[in-house]
Image (cartoon, rainbow, N blue to C red; front, side):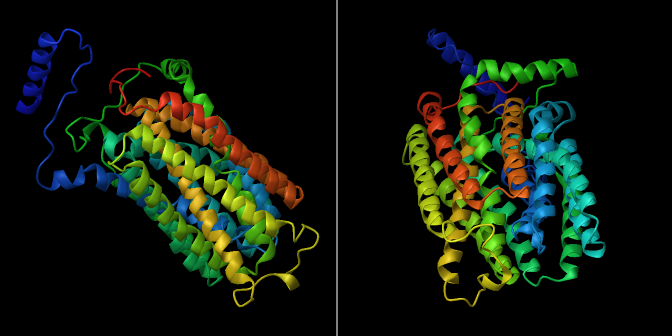
Length: 462
């Protein structure tokens, strides 16, 4: 224990004797590492490295998905594969927080990355053997298991490394780097050639390797000197009990469940039923590029400019964030409605698709940009709300597991609906209704649960 820690504990003891009404313990303060270890174990660097892992793996997945039908002429195989991805993701994601707490975030992250390489490789296979659509669907089911592990580990690390005042900034940093993967992947795919899939596979494998360079969370010290501690539980049974204890001790998380369900639901209409339906393949690639670029700016805007704005108390920032996201939901969907009513699943054809040189392309691509803004603002705000509920790595892993499980359940349902040919307008209206409902249900949680400071103990159970 450092001298600074001893001094801090002594100071806490003195204050306690002077003010018997104060029951809260002062957190232990540790000296930060020096030399090269100071840089390596810096929370900002570790979150940035985490962003690059997701840049290489989910980022490449997003680049392929954002093309509409994974860049194929028919969207059916992609829709069914995505349904498989999110179905297994939904099931395993509910328990992935438990797995993360038992295995540790680093190992969980490594196990989660390799499924992306397999899934991307399956599209290379289907390019060579067009009848191999079943293999893509099976690869999607495997990816769902892996993705549940990766995103749970990612969420617990991203939300536990920053101090309370830095959570919006750190989420913004991660989301910007992660979505840069979609930007780079979209630029590669814009050429629409055979070698682009091989490039995606190589990049995703680099992401697997990067996980071995992540620091041990138990050795991480935040910039304010407090230590990130991962509690140890004696058995798997204790971890599964912990899952339900989290719901009992902080039942407000249930009000975020509709928001969680909606958080990937809207991408089906954006990618397949808008981008994949009415644009040429070349235009899809450019739309995908601007979509993920917009995500970078959207996450930084709401994370840094709004949610971590020190001029206002955290509760005030929570309300401002809610108003902005809720308003963006209606701006995007009112705008999209006037486009959606002009076409149906039966009326679209390659002959009428919009190209980058079409006169109506600029107006339509701007909607894709705003969709990207909405997506990043939604995800950043959801993570920030969970981060405002706790600083405990174990608790945050469970919350992230809930988030990714319900997110994937919603996505599995809507991708399946798209795969069986449900009318575009039905998918669009359900998307609008669910996103609006998600924000309405979240409001009481924001009002009653978000406080200016989070009070919990690093080493305590959830």
